[in-house]
Figure (tube, rainbow, N blue to C red):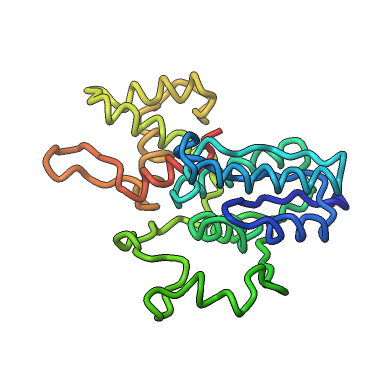
Length: 262
């Protein structure tokens, strides 16, 4: 196993919570998630300034460190964060199978932190870590001024959005062929393909996802090795209105949208 780990972290309104663990761990490579929805507005500028300060501190302390900018996806979308972190783990494993990957679940959005815990739970050699605050930037004398309203404790949040139930993930989705072939099935299902089995089989062959060596009994093989497996995992279900037809479940869509997408 490589001596220097790779760290995955998220930047919102913190610097020390991101930089100091990376320094302490001696990471050689860092994937930094951040997202600016409205770059022209002051709020967007503030998010960007925090991110740039984290980068500056990292390069000052480790001139040779590799920092990957992960800014294309909203960091408050839990499912997207699971997918993106999973993709990073998969891509890193391809060029360094033995490196240790560490995910900072103390910085960034709650969605990112929860996603980091999910990915670390299903991946060998991937660990989540937390750091606690040693010293706050706001003195206790300033707390009432900043976090009280009308003389009453309020905190950083004034109002919050509606509760959003987190989806349940299949933590140990290890069969890449089944997941990628499921995505093919869903694509043809969404296209209302009439002869869906034959179309899926042909596409699986094109994508090197078809595991049968000879051309005999292909439909039976598809039913046994693909559809039956999807059905047992709860990724597809019998269509309630159309006889002998199956449709993807929400669980199946979540798996197809999340894992092995790169």
